[in-house]
Image (cartoon, rainbow, N blue to C red; front, side, top):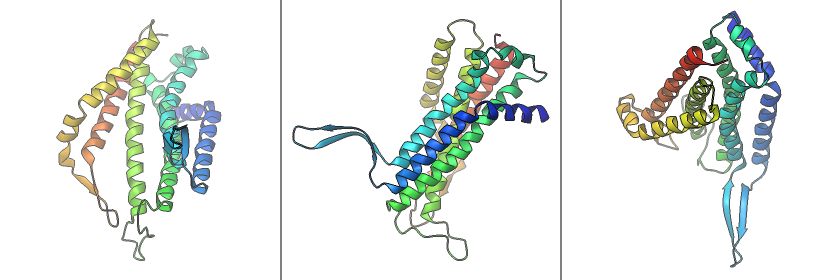
Length: 258
């Protein structure tokens, strides 16, 4: 456990500037979004009739969520590639620990950023939804503390989706990087091929996988926003992420080329 913690701290220190920049960016966008009423408009085209076509218009907290979601795979890939770009991968392989431990510390470091960033994104989206009255009749918890309000239901859904996404994308990137460093040539092409194949396989089997896990039931949300979420799709996504991650760990441990 001691080597794991030491390597984990090392990964956090090595990427602290990048992590801090993303944190500040996400927090800043969320704060600005909660102050501003207007949405973020990426592209707006004026029509001949005098109207406008908005190609992409989303709330600012939604923009922060997109930046957070798309940054995670690049952060993990960056953690893998840093050792190779700086020519310190020889030292990494010479460490008296298994490569499983080394890779898991990289995943844990990025996951730590993901958890903190996910909390920020969840709070930002939930506050925005409350402000825009997307969830009507929002109340704080009842005096007895037994009634869960729509605000917390919304936060739960967003949090569950982000956690599921993180497990899946970390698994895909770990598998991609493991296969990539198992070959000496065409590493970029191999990585892209694995990414495409894994996401295609995930999507192709999603309906069957989610249906198989229907026995897990649903999460029922309380009033004033009554709805239910099927757990099958979330669990299937997590399982696929874990499978891809195991593939990457095993291949990297057994076949990674120095």
